[in-house]
Amino acid sequence: MLGYRTLSVFSEFLLKLQSTDPRDLIRLSKIRAEAIATSVSRVLPEGERLLSGWTLFAPKELNTKIGDKFEEKVLLL
Image (cartoon, rainbow, N blue to C red; front, side, top):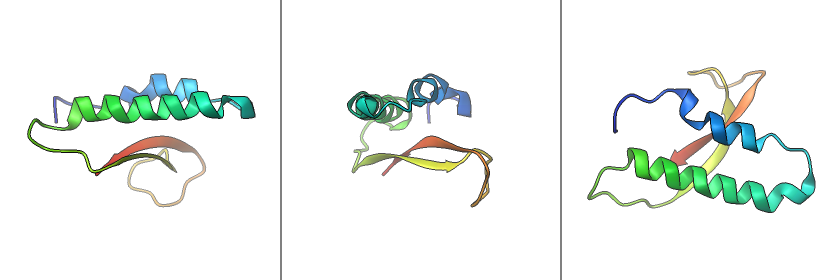
């Protein structure tokens, strides 16, 4: 991993993802794809390949399975 990262790395993406308008689904899918691409460029070392990447909802608190607040996170495989 390139340096120390905190949860604030994706704050820009999370702000853009707060939408309730159904017409924004296409825009949101582009933002999610951009979040995956940004994550790959920041954390994937040279010589390793990306199998796939997803965004998913997970509890905001770390090391918990169930929570009151959720946020989107990026999972790279």
